[in-house]
Amino acid sequence: MRNFLPLLLLVLTVSLYAEVKIGCVSMGQVLETSKKAQKIHQNMQKHLEDRQKTFDVAREKLEAEEQSLQSKLEKLSENDRKTQQEAFEKKVAEIQEMGAKFEQELSAIEKKETEGLKEEIHRVIKLIAEREKLTFVMEKEAMYFGGIDITGKVIAELDKGL
Image (cartoon, rainbow, N blue to C red):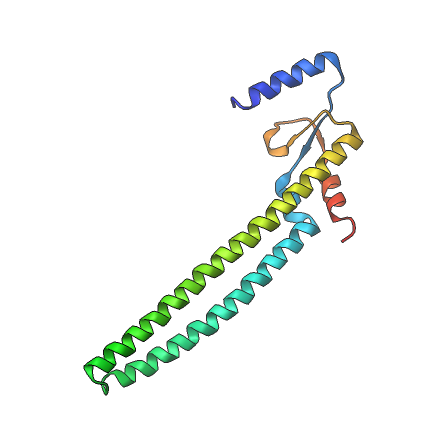
């Protein structure tokens, strides 16, 4: 609430001197319905599925190796058993490390894609605000009533050329 007080004072001050046109945009709706955002989501899903397949293959191979090892352990000497178990534990650690690396890669890709999309959304909002001669543009969820909703225009502008 404290964050909106300075903004409210600014709006009131400006309104004394000029016509104030306040726009609003639903970022949630833009991120959910724009084709550009959906394309990014699909790309992320593809990366996730590709990584998951690779991880699943490695995990299945490890599970088969574990079953094979279990059947052999009783026949091995104590030293050979210990060596085999250590080698298996090393492979488990490698698979866990691979999973963690995949998560980090996906997080980095998602962050890069999301930041790029947000920058483009802000650019489009600014373009529409200038075109519509809006004094301010606020997040729709922060407004109780009023304002000119430009969400549809933002989505249309984002999706141009796709």
